[in-house]
Amino acid sequence: MAHGNCSDMVFLALLAVAVQWFGFPDTLFQDLGPLKAQFSTKSADMSAIIKFGGGLLLMLGMTFSGVRWNPKNGKMAGLGGFIASGYTAYSTFQADSGLFVPRLFYVYAAILLLGALHIFAFPSNPLPPKTPETKNNHGNFSDLAALGLIIAALLCFFYPEHLFQETGPIKAQFKATTADLSAMIKFVGGLMLVIALMLSGVKWNPINGKLAGLGGFIAAAYTAYSTFKADSDVFVPRPFYVYAALIFLGALHIFAFPSNPKLAKPDAKKA
Image (cartoon, rainbow, N blue to C red; front, top):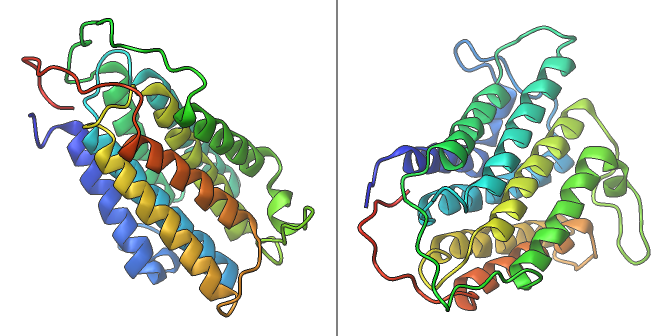
C-alpha cells in the first residue's frame, strides 16, 4: 500500500495547511519565526477567500492520497501543480519588488511542487493493463466539471475583475481589490487548476474517487455555507456558489458515479 510515501506526506502537509486556514487564519497575518507575514490587512473579503482556499487545499490533499498514481494518470495533474507552484512563487517574488522575502506562500508552493514532481515523474505504481472495460471517457462529467474549473482558474489568473463586478444575476463576490486579495485570488486559481486537471486526467473508479470526492463535498459545502453566513443568512447569488457547484458536481461524479470499473488488484504499491 506504500502508506507514508511522498503523496501521503504531501497530503499531510496540505491537511496541515487546510487546518491552519480553517482554524488559525490569523497566522497568515503574523511573522512565524523566519517567515514574514503573508498578508497585512484583515477584511471580510480576505476571510471569505481564505475559507474557500482551505477547502480546495483539503480536497487537493485527499486526492493526492486517495489515487494510485501511475506513469499516465499523474501527467496532467503534475503539470497543473508545476504551473500553480511556479506561478505562486513568481507572483510572491514580484510582489516583494523582486526580492526574496521568506513567506508562507513559498512553503505552500514547495509542497505543491513536491507533490507534482512525485505524481508526474516518480509515481509509485506501474501502468495498469488495458482491458475491454477500460474507457477513455472524454467528455464525461468529470471532464465537464474540469472544464468549468479551468475557466474559473483562468479568470482568476487573467481577469480577476470578474469577482468584483456584477454579471447578470450574479452579484460581486468582493468589494474592493487589495494586494493581499489579489495574491489570494491567484493562489486559489492555481489550486482550482490542479484540481481540474486531476478530475480530467485520472480514470476514476469505485475506489480511487472516494477520498477526493469526500474532500470535494466538504470544500463545496463549506464554501456555500460560509458565503451564505457572510450575507447574513440570505442567499445572494455570487461566484463562490458557482465554484462550489462545480466542485460538488465533480466530487459527486467521482465519488458515486465513476465511469470505470474497479481495477483488479495488481502487485503494486499505492501512490
